[in-house]
Image (cartoon, rainbow, N blue to C red; front, side, top):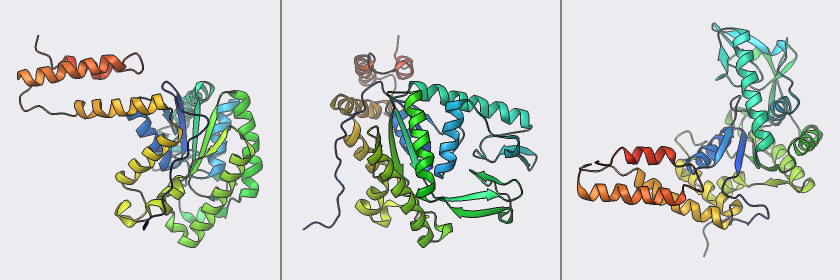
Amino acid sequence: MDFRTVLSPSSSKIQVNLGDSFVTIGSCFANSIDQNLKENKFSSLNNPVGILFDPASIARVLMYALDGSRPTENSYCSINEAVVNLETHSDTNGKTKEEVEGIIDGQLSQLSKALRNTKWLIITFGTSWIYTHISRKLQVANCHKIPQKEFEKSLLTHQSTEPLYDDLIKKLRKFNPELQIIVTVSPVRHVKDTLPLNNLSKSHLLILSHYLNSTYNHVHYYPSYELVLDDLRDYRFYKTDMLHPTEQAIDYVWDHFTQSYFSKEALNFLDQWEAIKKALQHKPFDPFSQSHQRFVKSTIELLKKISPKVDTKEELEALTRQLIV
């Protein structure tokens, strides 16, 4: 008898190979994927202007990177002696407007370069609820703790985002003809919206994702939302806030993701690298003992074997420093 609704990996026709690079953009879940990619020696650029939650904000930032445009004058404001931009995360800030403009220009230029050369773009949608600054008549990506009364809240429906993403997907394809796009919906619930309205929000994101996946051959849907809410479906997989997945849940999603998209060569490398990572985390009782010196030398040999495939310079240097000359 089964006591779980298991969501088994389904192998993608287009697969991730060693050496492929990624751009991840969107909600916190994009950060989790990015972290796993980097820990496993894949090149990844994550949320250059900070976390973005709604589809309109994500599309706007991507369009800035594609066409070279930048946020308007109207999007800059001063808060607690710092200047921020309402179309980016609060992590992007400075003492002057000119400083923040320079930071954002650098971030978007970096994103543009990455999009030109990357193989994979992962977009994680978080919410359909958006906020418009009333006096500025500006749709924002982040409220930056400005009083709620200055904003109007509204629902971004899939009917409004589908044509927006039609335009974006076509421009991305023209910008980089080899680009493969994975869209997913964050499993993190936005309970401040209330659970019924959070579910309404997620439904529009799921419909948008389905539309893109069914319309474009190079757009793929990854079911991270269903994997956490339906497969794991247990509060032991959530942190104490009962909203964010635990590390165990994130590891489960990562393993499912790799089984779905990674080639056999890439999966074999992940197994090799996992063993090496555990070796690198080893803390010796006696660094000068013969047994530890043998251990260091054998780990160095393992790293040298995979060095033609990935960059292991940092790890080799760290181990070499442990050798007794």
